[in-house]
Structure formats: C-alpha cells, structure tokens
Length: 180
Image 1: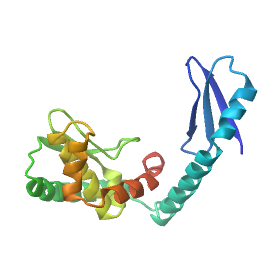
Image 2: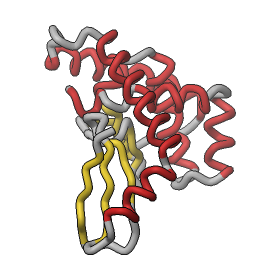
Image 3: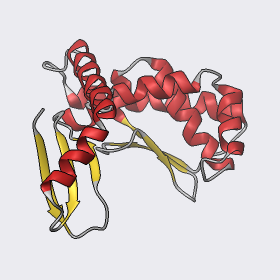
C-alpha cells in the first residue's frame, strides 16, 4: 500500500483516504517516519474498510453511466424533482422553508441555513429517489433543530425510519461529488 505523507504545522497525526483512493497521512513537522508507519499499521483495518468503500463507490459511479451525461439537462431535471419533493415533504412534516436552491457543492449533499433556505445538490437527481427523500427530510428537520442532537434524529426517524441505512448508502456515492 502506497502512503503519501504531508508534513504540516499541526499537533496530531491525521489519516485519510483521498478522492482518488490513496492513503494520506498529515503529520506534524519533524515527526519520525517510523512513528508514522507504526500509526498507519495500527489503523490498517480502518484503511482496508475505507478502501473497500471507495471501490464500491467507484462501482456505483460506473453504474450511473456518467460518460454521456448532459449536465445542463440533468440540472433542469433536478430543479423540477427537488421542487416537487421538497413541497411534498415540507407539507407532510408541516415545516415552512424560506427558499430552495440547487447546489453544486463538492463536499455535501444538502444544507439548511439559519434563515431556513434549503440547498440540495443537483447530483442527487442521479441517485435512487429514496436518497433524495432522505436528504430533503434531513434538511427540513434542521428547520426545527439546527444541530444533530437526538431531537433532530427523532424528527428524521419519524419521517424516514430507515434513515441509517440510507445515510450509509448515500456515503457510498460520495465520490460522485468529486467526479462530476
């Protein structure tokens, strides 16, 4: 396994799998290499799990047939789909949002501002609809609870009982945020 090490101004070691599926260690300047290698070895099961997840997400991307994707057309589809879904869920959850916008964020599927503007990543329109529903429910729940407390998750659970499974599935598609 090839490891990339970045020495930086920081206090602790950090380990991550990059969007390309490579192992990256961020280390404080002057950290001995043998200490870094020992750290990586102690995290080998975590690394293997993350790399396996990366492989699954790559397979998911292949299944989406992204080569011939017309992004302009897909964003129009997303706008209509998100508008329809958010209207349905906001009525069902009896929550009022201020505005809805499509996002092209590279690191998140959705967000909710303090002013209750909901942003939904247009790439969700490429995924199974239950994942879009989950993200919309999640963001609407932030209208009542602006955090991820147990109260927040109780709201999500009320409208999406399998949210834990969907959340995990959504993570397997995380690479799509970086690719398109």
